[in-house]
View 1 (cartoon, each protein chain N blue to C red):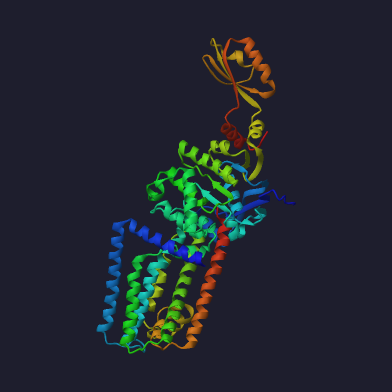
View 2 (view 1 turned 120 degrees about the vertical axis):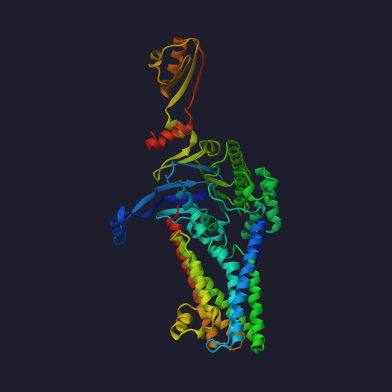
Length: 332
Length: 262
């Protein structure tokens, strides 16, 4: 494979299998398990390839257990691949060389690294020392990031007394102290309320613009992905099945549009059947799912056939589409 | 190297701050430490009232061994226990991931992250006993014997640390807190008495298999000016072997962790 110098991350035919022992229930099963252990390989990630350029923000989508976290951990060097290749900025992540570790960072929404009983500031200076930053450098850096994250005297309050949102922002500050150029974020907004989520999101987007850092992110919240990631990589049961921009994913997922109509007078549902799938019908309001190629015809017919006060055309919500996608398991 | 020293300084100052964070708990810890100290002193006083000979050791020189034991026990409480019993939590909670992604040796991080200041008085008491008892037994210190004493203490500590770390590192497989601590304390406690006070077979085991002799008896002999160069040399090799093995084992354990964790 030829590596284009413009590729920061190259993942090539990457697979990861976990060896699992199969134990039958009961005492007999236990004995058998002890003497004649049967193991089999469970694929977590199968034959995934993609490339990422510097400065990109890429979202990894997938249901629980799809293999997102395994993939992310292989890219930051915490899990050794079974087969295939990962290259991050010319480094092999699993070797965890110092020069590589100084370029990356990992934020895990459900795990914390700040010392629980002390204010974040203490942990920040420990991290600064670990990364070899001088006190002055650390101070400048902390001030800069604290301003971007809107953190003030929270940094001098014990971590256990902070709200989840404040804590997450402090965690992010701690993991960005050493100016990493590649950010791996595993569910960074997990459990946060809508406002806190939005603040984390706007910070990440701002950070990406200011520093040109590459951001790789997994999230359950579709809003994170739509707000931050022009490019998404979808994983289902360990396999990659979509890699491209979010808009065309929406198009390929949903060849239909939602047409919402407000009528002057109520009409029975039978009258709308020929135009498209009725999603909702409520007194004077009708919502139809219409395939894109018929859209103009349907709309003009509707306008001539009925007395219409208002008409609105939209995409079905993306999270609903993705949800259907994971159930179906493939892109149309 | 300088980065490592600065890191240790910050590790320990934050550890101190965390311990002060809960005032009541800190007071209780101080009381518990005082209790341990009184216990040690009581056991020592039993030595004074006795009249028996332990192996070929006089009372005063046996007291030196008690001093070394108290010193090592203090060091265990200050450094080994707080850090090494924590490894299992790093594994269970998955925060080991954060440690592994820091540009610093992970074994270093896990071994020195914490420092319990409640262990300090015991360390000081131990050293005081060593010197007091050594003077009582008529030993005259020379630079040479002090130097050999420090080296042999280091040998003992490294062996104790390595064994403990090996056991703690195995928690990568058995993600479960099991009481290895007690096994190790028993091992250390066996070193309260001169090695020659034990039967020949135990003496052999404690020197070569479980090197208890290196923990307490040999440092005591060093300060009394009785340690032979051969034993010191053997100790240096043995402790380097133990330490190297603990590092190799950790690398091996990590290989397993990184290929099995999710």
